[in-house]
Length: 290
Image 1 (cartoon, one colour):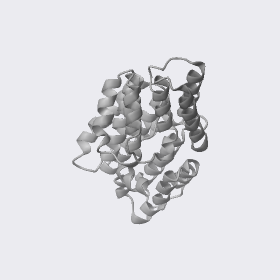
Image 2 (cartoon, rainbow, N blue to C red):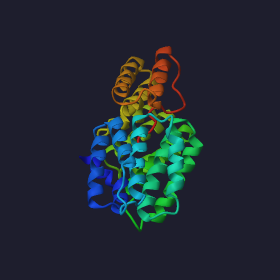
Image 3 (cartoon, rainbow, N blue to C red):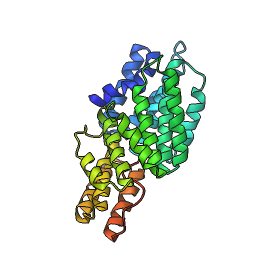
Image 4 (tube, rainbow, N blue to C red):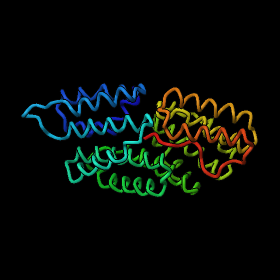
């Protein structure tokens, strides 16, 4: 599956510190994430993290990686109420460790940025994404971190949108879209559309949304439809906007946890459109797929 192949960039270099048998044990987690089986992936990862270990195999890397998988599954699903303290705790443990563990740390920090975005702490999310990008620059000659970089850039673009800096967000998202594939391409395309909506360029946003883009992973459920609905709302095509945002809400309800920030955002967008309110200055396509 394409998602599994692309996420070698997230987790594959970190699994280089594992034995072949251990690496094989982690592969089903990628398959479950690809299938959108977030709760199952989180449970499997936590079981791996807590599994008794042999005396001669007590390196911390497998446990760190399993915990990172579990937290990633929770973030993607949208069940985030407990996640930020756990991300912070794991990040502290991963400081000043091996190269493989530094890659795990970057994954943890991307997830932290996503959680901050969901909490609308946009300035903090921007700072986190910028720090990740600086670290990626330092590690780029040692390991392949392009996928982590693209995820951090998507977080940065969304953080800029959240602060009303739509032209900067468009530059970041559009400037890196050609490098992205799969879910990251879908996310960056939505961010381009959202940044155009934020600038009041609704016709351009609608045209941009029609460009060929890979389908989003389940964590991106509703993201594209919400961006399109916001553009239609901006153009005064409210009946179409209502239909589209309801489609987004159905997608969110099918695949995401009820507490996922996008559920709230979809309902708020629907309420604004049906009330005849003017378009919001903030984009409504977020929050959060790494």
